[in-house]
Length: 341
Image (cartoon, rainbow, N blue to C red; front, side):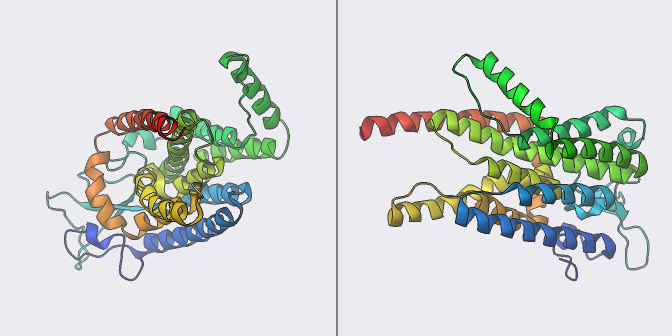
């Protein structure tokens, strides 16, 4: 990853001089993520649970790394006619700024929340307070995910929502969640004021990665639970995906979520034949897919970048896929009930 520029080299149009300091930070970030995922996977295999004692500190570390060292995020080599807000220039062997195939300067950037598009210059300004509100709201959404919740819908969905809101509000006001909420929001506001444009971009990217990645798994969990009438996926998988999202961003997490089922399907079929057990821990397969995406990032991003350039069409397709998943699982349940009753 460092000496051979494994995540960057295949994104370059030809051999060029890439700044090595950001690459070292990426390596440190990925080693930390690997250790966290390894611990979570082993516990999930053994105990069928992913403890918050791993995902909560891991998420905080990911947020701090993305804020203080934005280049710890996955790399993106791109042409920008204007100076990059968040990137470093790529040079030729002679020390000149390298030009891409379209004649624009080449930059080494982190994969931000809007990649492959450029980070808007107006977002780099300190007075862009709506982005701070998005950052705080994303952090509070993570805290909401950590709060204990039990859905009680016997008296209707409105009463169920009121009970959940009351429970979460009570948890917000007592430790340890109250400390996480208060100190976290304060830290986000202070860092927003103290770090530069690149740091704010890194912080917002990590927080959006946290929420979007967790939302993918959470939506599948709800859709599958509705169709199967049982828990389709543990909530530890949601918090695990949130942690991974702070390190890799939402784009990589979307890709790994579609890769993970292939390994899970092979192991699940083998386990079903040998042990007659149709329940497998899914966390290790999410971690395995994350490792595959990181190792193959240069090739993966060259293929996926044009797709993510479609903008809002990507989340719209995801919503349709989640709805279709629930419908397919519901139909499968009807088929099973008809054939095996």
